[in-house]
Image 1: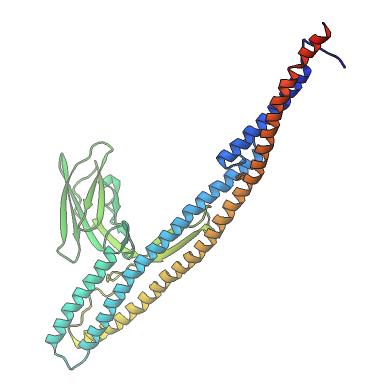
Image 2: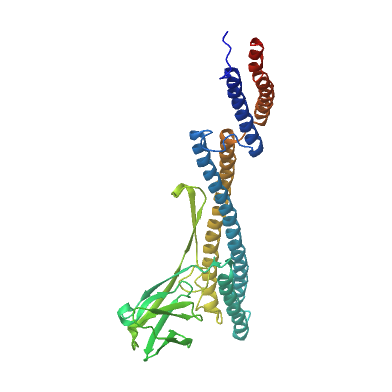
Length: 374
């Protein structure tokens, strides 16, 4: 056995093993403190990549679950409005049945027709005011077709009819040096609205919001005098489409869509009661048929809303299972096993304490060599 003073090999060896034990104890402490066995890429380069993907997927699925719950609430709101419209249609059927009988007079029918008009107005109000947040649910989507003069070179850059009621409107623009007077009129009625806007210069535009009609017109610096039948705006109401993102991928299997019809009484709507009355026996008989048709269409539309609610509910159940399983998979990769980590910590703690004691002994070896020199 060689005895050396210049280099204490035993001490160096003990220090190396002490460093290993200290590193192991520090890692165990880190895992016990964070709850994760992977705290940085160096711990498991492949594992942290997989865990990150699973974490992102779980977060997206969680938000998809929120989307689904809100979608169900949204459709329930729509159905509550449809239910009230159904109640009004039931009353309209009663009024029409009563008015179609010869046991009442025309004066009685006039009184019944007044109620009919009020109830149809209430249907329109329900269709307008049934909202989820700011989203109208029962009004349908309005689309427009425009006259030949309603183009940018004539001063009209854009027309937004998303909030408009079905009908034909006439637009006129009277431009002066500093301003433009824009008038919108609903054909077939005396309803009109005139607004004055600053005339834009160069390539700028100005929005003119006709709040009475739910129409917004964007004019540009080319605005001139445009009073002609070619300026007609024809608005038709159709189905509002709602698409719900119920998954973490942009594809059809992760989306559910539903169309909700326009429940106003306009001629282009689902119910199509506008312009018909019950102030005569013959009119009341015809109105009976129209109400029956409206109720049948309402039931079909309501069934579609209910079917969508059920579809979303089942989809949510699957999403919740996916979320649980995704989190479980992430946990097996990333989460620390506290029993194992506590055992490792205890082991390395004991080894460290033993190493410190042995290092003290190793550092005493040069003293023993000195005794040989006496």
